[in-house]
Every structure is written in C-alpha cells, then in structure tokens.
Length: 424
Image (cartoon, rainbow, N blue to C red; front, side, top):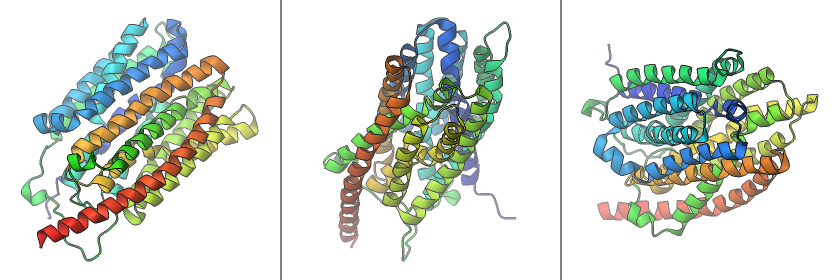
C-alpha cells in the first residue's frame, strides 16, 4: 500500500483546530453579549472593549509573528495558543466585573494569534504548493461547521435556568472542549515535512492561478505604494465585517425574533459559511484574485443592507435567512482571503512576515469596528443605521481594491520577469 503523505494529517489537524477554536470561541461570541451585560450590569459599548482588547492583542502579536514562528516553531506556538484560550474561557466564566472580562479578551486575542488564520496560512504554505486556495478554503470552512455545532450546544446551555448563570456553564464546557482538542492536535503535529513528503514547485507549461511564486522581500514590498493600499483596504474590510457579523445574532433578537429561531438561522449561516469558504478557495484557484475579491465584496454590501432590514415579520425573517446564507460568501474576506492576498500579491519570499502584518491590520479593524457598532446601538437604540453606513463604506473599499489589485498584478509580472532574467 502507498504510504500516507503526512501533509494530509497536518491538513486534518489544521481543520480540527479551526473547527474548535473559531467554531466554539468566535462563532458563538454574539450569544454571550446579552447575558453577560445583563448579569454584570454594564452597557454593550463597555462590554465591547473586551473585543477591542482581544483584537488589539492579536494585531500586535501578528506584527511579530514571523519572528515568533522562526524561533519556536508551529507546534509550540499552537500549544501555547490552546493554553491561553482555555485560560480566557475560565476568565469569562468567573468574571463578575469588567476587569476579568478584559483579561479574558486579551488572552483570547493571544490564543487566536497562535491558533488561527495566520498559523494555518504558514503551515499550508510549508506543506502544500498547488491548489493552496482550495485546501485553505477547506480548512477554514471548518469554522462554519464548528460554529453550526457549537450554536446548537451553547445556546441551550446559555438559556438554561439553573443556580449558576447559563453562560458561565457554557464557558466551562468550551474550555473542556479546547483542552481535549489541544492535546490531540499538539500530539500529532509536526513542524517540518520530511524530504519525501515535501511538495516542491514544478515547472508547468501553464501555471494555475492559485500557484505559488517566489515573491518579493519585505523591504521591497515597503517601497510599493500598493502595499499600503492593501493594508488600508484590509483594515477597513475587517472593521466593517466585524461590525456587522459581531452583532448579527443580537440584532435579530433585538427586533423580536425568537431566540431558538435565531439559533437555527445562525446554524444555517455557519453551514453556509463552511461551504462558501471552500468555494472561495476553489474560485481563487480557477479565476484569480480579482474575480474572487469582487464576488465576496459585492455580496458583503448586499447582505449588510439585508441585515439592516431584518424585523419580526415574515418579510423580516426572510431577510434574516437571506443574510444567514449569503453572508457566508462575504466573510471569507476576513479569513481565507488574507493568506491569499499575501501569497498572490507578495509571494513566498517574506510570506510569514507580510501575512502577519496583513492579519494585524485586519484584526486592528476588528478592534475599531466592534465598539463603534455597539456605541451606535447605545446612541440610536438599534444597530440598523450602523449597518447601512457600513454598506456604503464597503462600496468605497470595492473601488479602492480595483486599483490595488491592478497595480499589484503589474508589480508581480515585473518581478517574475526580472527573476527569470537573473536566472538565465
């Protein structure tokens, strides 16, 4: 029998890691907003500082991600990520004031920096050379599958009537799930492919759009104006998408839709997100960066206006279902598309460093978007106006991205031609 290529074990472990961490600790996040703020007696704007601290921590750590990975290796970084995420869940469970909540947010941000999209991007780039978009999409699609399962487990626990607030019990359950998954993943993970398992770049007569290229150095990238344009667009995209998706469940509950129906709608969302993440990677491998970005961004504008129109009527519930389905085609912009931006526009030469910076700017956008949206609610008593504003802002980002991608493609072509001449 042919020996199993260990890269598929690594892919499976990455799938499991995203399934658990993002599925249970991120996809369920909005379920906790109402119960925690009511129990502690704080406004949602005050609570959202917890999210800002989480995202700021992730952003800062990712700036140094390349150096951290080089020194410690992926296995140790992932192990540390699971440990701090468990500590984060325990902080949330025991919190009776904002300070322990804020510590939980910092630890959660640290955990996501070491178990999330950035690590997966580096691991896939190291172990896989062809069809990276499709494989990355399959791995990150596990977020949606994990979220669908987690919503059905966590929501009933939060709504349960016991002597202890339901949300506290839910956090203990999530901590236990993280502990079991972390032990399994770290036990089987391997930092480097053995020589026989390496997939080397081969010379193809016609290169696929999703293939790797040698790329430019970080110092070269810093001299390119489109590098900064990329970071600004990614920052704004993260800001907008976190602002809307972070409050979607609570917005549906606020307008009067029954809690159990919202949980079901959100499980549909999570399943669709899984499918669309895989589809996004496949589309990128077949059509390239521009087409993929345009599909995701245009869809994001549509679903923002749809979510703003949700209400406790037949039509409003239909809008909620539409959002739950098609927002899954917008959200890859803040996950799978980040490694794709780094690889497609800047290549492999300084991949870990540039990807870390890209994820930092995306996460910094999260830190801004979440509190602004909740402050909008505190001011207007509804998320509706903030959702509409985000839709118009995203239209401006779409226009800017067209210029960024055009200039980036030109720079890539020039770099490849220059490298070809130097090799002659």
